[in-house]
Length: 228
Image (cartoon, rainbow, N blue to C red):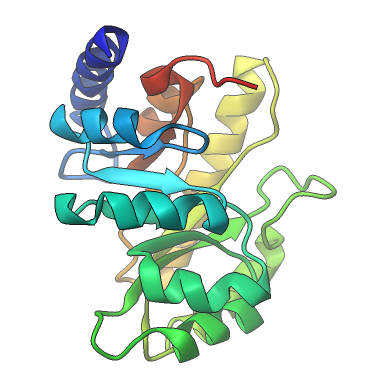
């Protein structure tokens, strides 16, 4: 936990500095702790150190953690690919979902969102690097999907999410972020209320913030290398 304390302090300091330079955010960039495979004890410690947002990839792993930690009133984000048969439970339990990439899933989430909860915040995932076998809609499909999903009654469309191709070339990563920022600006013409760009992970979050990210999803930068 000593390394977690140090990591969180360093990350939050870096994010604050970069947030001041963010071209589209007038407030601090939100840090989402990607807590896949992390034990409840570490998540609780991270919460004590100021992290309020946690992202999970797998429903079956997330639900027990959420049950154990429910008294902490954390904000839970579903950040992994979503299968249609999991939409009901995600709609019932999560505050955000970042990985909506087709209308049928969005409609199911809206239909299953309980009435006593507020609308489910969601981002449309875009396959910005046009990778085969990766989730996300094609950029050309985005305008139609924006209009179709923005009117669903139990959802609140917040913005876009991307996971660029895993490459070591900083220039190529920057080009992907630039393309995403341009797509975000174009999307705001269609849906002016968009306010969220979920972009950047442990290896590139500072560059992502420079290009307008308002949410970064950090795993190893906070928790250290994941046990495999």
